[in-house]
Each structure stands twice: as C-alpha cells, then as structure tokens.
Length: 115
Length: 112
Image (tube, rainbow over all chains, first blue to last red):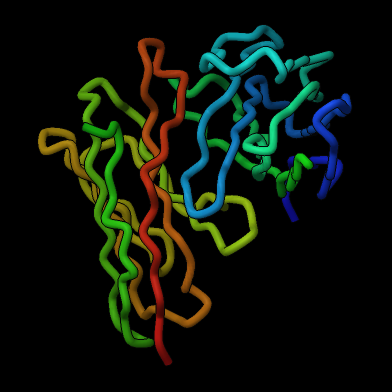
C-alpha cells in the first residue's frame, strides 16, 4: 500500500463544476508534487511545493489551483475544466527537494473525467 | 530533442531471460536518476534510484549510470511474467534541479 493517499479515486465532473482533489502523506516529507498523466503517456509535472511554498508552476492553466495547507496535505482545486483535462492526476512526495537526492513516492492517483 | 528518451518497445523477453532497458538524457547537470514501474491503470512505483556512475544492484534489478555518455540503464534478471509493465526512466532537471522529468516509458512483455 502506498503511503501517499489520494482522494477521491475516481471523479466525474461537468465543465461548470468546482471540485477538489486531495492528497495526504504522513512520512514527514517536505516536498509535494502534482502530476498529470494521459493514457499511454508519461506523467507531466504540474506543480511543486517545497517546504509548503509553491516552487514550480509548469505554466498550468488557472483553472487548476494548487493549495498546500500544511506539510502533510496538498489540494488541487478544479474549476471550469475542459474535456481534454480528463486524465489520471498523481500526487507525489519526497523527503526533501530533488536536489537533495530524494526519490518521489506516488499516490494511487485520481482518475478524472470531465463531461 | 526530448529531455529524457526511451525506446517505447514493446520489449518482448522470454521468462527467465534478462531484460535490458535504456534511457538517455540531455541535461548534463542532472544528478538523480530513477526507474519506476507502472502497471496499466496504476500509479508509478519506484524500483531503483542511482546517483553515482557505475552499477547499483537491488535483488533482480541492476541500474547502470554513465554521466559522461548521459546514459542510464536498467537490467531485469530472471524476468517473470509479473515484470510485464511499462518502465519509466526519470531524471531531475530544471535550473534548480527540483523537477523530475520522465521519459516516454518502455513497455516490457515477459512471455512464459
């Protein structure tokens, strides 16, 4: 079982809905990440939080809004999504920033479908 | 040129044989290299990580790194049908080295 917990496992939402994806880790990790993965493609980085501060935003559209309330929690708020945003959203954490040689550990993901 | 490149496969190997997977990367400043296994519909699972030139062995897996050639590889010995999956090479990139960039993945099929 993964030590990074993501909820919900599946989410179906309309283009006018507002929803949130949640991620939690209790390993004392200080860096957390959101990745997006389309079918048969590798994960693509969206956001990196390091010590609860947003350190990387990979030019993600504003309809995706990340939030890191504390060192254990990471949220991704979704609003006015498009059908092409349907994908597997992966949360990951690492003990420290990657330049400290910390591997990423992934959660099980949230399968998002936008209708 | 993509930052991290892998042969997409599929790499078909008979059960019990050695599977050899290759990965090249473009950022000479990269210091951390990871191999993840991903089963269909599941999330990536960390198999190995390597930071220094040379070989690193863990059970049936061996990672090899050559920074001069910007090349990292993964060997799977005594391949089992349960090893059938997509293997993702990942490398830390970016000015601060704080990003993990994935290759496209190599699909491995182990045939009984």
